[in-house]
Image 1 (tube, helix red, strand yellow):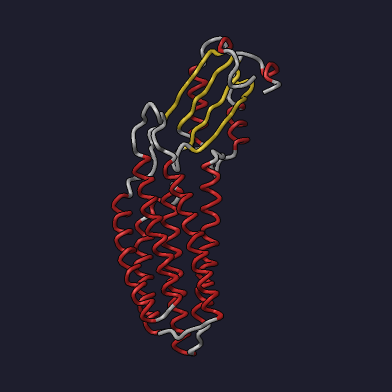
Image 2 (tube, one colour):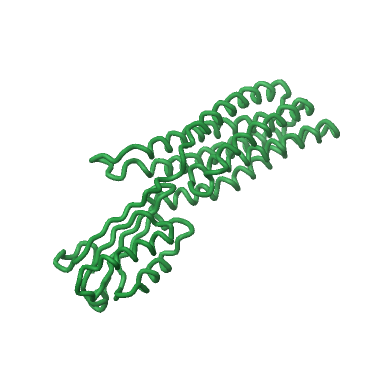
Length: 307
């Protein structure tokens, strides 16, 4: 029996909406992070041309993509807080998911640009000022590290915030690699070190972006959120006293921080099972599912073989 079957069989319908509405407002963190990184992009670009360093220019391009990523992530976070409307009855809670997807695409574009130019420089090397590279990249470690810390407390609960955190933390590591490149150039004078390190930067970015891309696409397609096993949820509901069967169970991300579920619960209890619904909601909350719609039916599970 599917979702669209007759309502003659329905004896209970419960909606539950938790009061936890996502991560705290990171507006200030976004503003500070954007300002810091935009300023650093300008510094890196200028000194990248002065020092003739592909590593610095590559890192500047990557940092620029992260500035755009922070802007998109901030926009997504703001949109997610908009109240529901007749056109968007859930509000715009999925906006941060789209922002995370856009961030992963920005990273892939940055990888392509950095890799192409690094390969060109590898076959056509040019002189690089190693000391300038080291100084500017060292500043990048401080800027990116400080920005990452602004998002550290929200990274466990929100893919959008985690995307911003991972970008900045990776940038700090990349800047450390650029410092190493400048040190090697200053010691050895080998020109190939700069483009090779740029390729290493591209590989690091690519590696970090794959996970974000996969998770954001998964959430965009309404896949069951990571950390939740649909079979375990169904088994937990079916194990409740008075429950004969559970069918038409659907779990999907309502936003980057909230999960929703709908399910049909079959019971033989004669009275309206308020206590059953209360216990079912408690089970779902144990899986960190705050938004639930439960349809109670008083039919035996054998009537639902085709579900």
